[in-house]
Amino acid sequence: MRPSRKIKLQSQAQKSTWAEAIKSSFDVKDPLACPVCKNGMISKVIYSYQASNKEKELKKKYALIDGYFYQKRSRDPPDAF
Image (tube, rainbow, N blue to C red; front, side, top):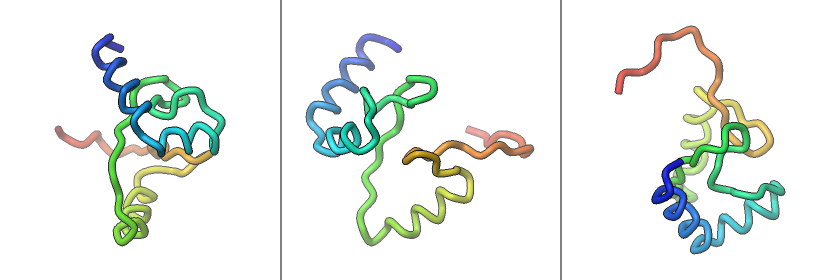
């Protein structure tokens, strides 16, 4: 990971209260890093009125394991960028 990216992620973690909640809830060192590959994860804000729809949408392509969404294995070709 590039140093500038690491600094940005560290500042986001220090500023956010949800990062502290994840640290205590899931017992992880870095809540902004993937627990498997240690790369930075994408963080998005989901409002309560969107939560159930977003969860259903995520569960189509991702499996929820230990509080993290992991991409399901598929035989489909990858999506185009």
